[in-house]
Length: 230
Image 1 (cartoon, rainbow, N blue to C red):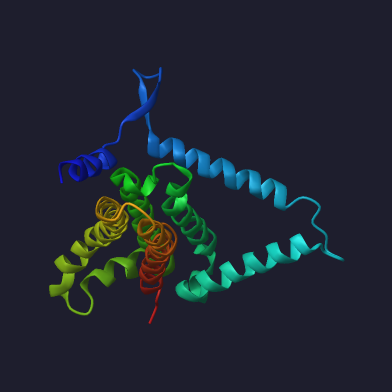
Image 2: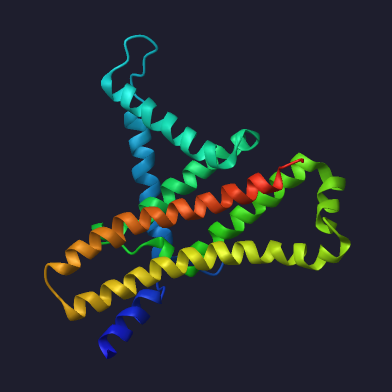
């Protein structure tokens, strides 16, 4: 049990990889470096996949790429609704980032979503988008009025909800990713061969992608609720 606790503590500890010698020294943590790697990989893929696109007689690569992009737009657009279609590109980006972050452990990297700072940042971006979308759609007067609906007594609860939503998004993602690591560590200690491989496929792929979907689904749901005019 001591080894398990040590492994979990080590996984939760975020050590700086290097320090940028400006402004007194800016520490760059592993989660940031891995995020840069993910960004570089997808940037390279974008540059490669969008080469030689044609309007007529598209290649098989272009047809497959267009199919994937259309599917993602329909998938995420169905969650946020037609009125929130302008937020679909951002939501797709978050979906891809979290999904890939959750499965990058199979390549020997530490998942950025195991860093609480990363999940807090994602949750804060989501709540800013959620409240900003509601403010733009309803205008300031109607937006402020929504805090006392359906009755003025709901004002403190509606204000409290602004803080609860990002906390819920943050802790759900962080807790599930860390929980999957804890379960995998226990399984590896009890059954060190064969069985962990099967569970790894579940936790690293299926569960990781499910957590990305849940985060984006809840963000989309909150945006949809916020921009409703009726």
